[in-house]
Image (cartoon, rainbow, N blue to C red):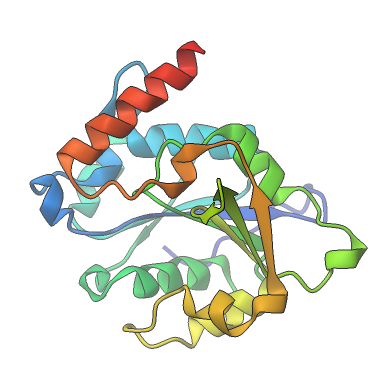
Length: 217
């Protein structure tokens, strides 16, 4: 796809979302993480798209690579802008760059959300995207933290986006907060889903059980 066109009728402060779902999921038995089923919720990417809509994020992009056509076919009814990334095997940094490039030359603030952490609560997104206030005007990396552990998703400001677009493939996204600690805002949340890294079927099932318990509470 080409550059995403923003709706001129929306307010000046817009927050976009990029859902990172391009990886090969080798440790998941080859089944794409974004297509893993959540009972009563549908595929992982469907839940993530609904949470983004609830937080009033726009546009919402999904970066896909491995089995890209299957993602689009199964999730064609979702209000997503699909970004197909042929270089998905190069890793998460290159996938994030593909999404950022699709936002265009004047991107809004952007939430970067990997499918490894699909059970993040709506309230967490709402806290992350709330305006930080004048005292934190230099913030470019807002990150949720559960019991002192930082996780995902992260909210990127313009400086973070520009720097990440210059990163080589082997440079992790975490290089930005390490090099710019004063640009980081840590947002405490009561949400264990932010620290998930669901790389195996067992880890996914454990997190799903916890998520069901949270929904019943």
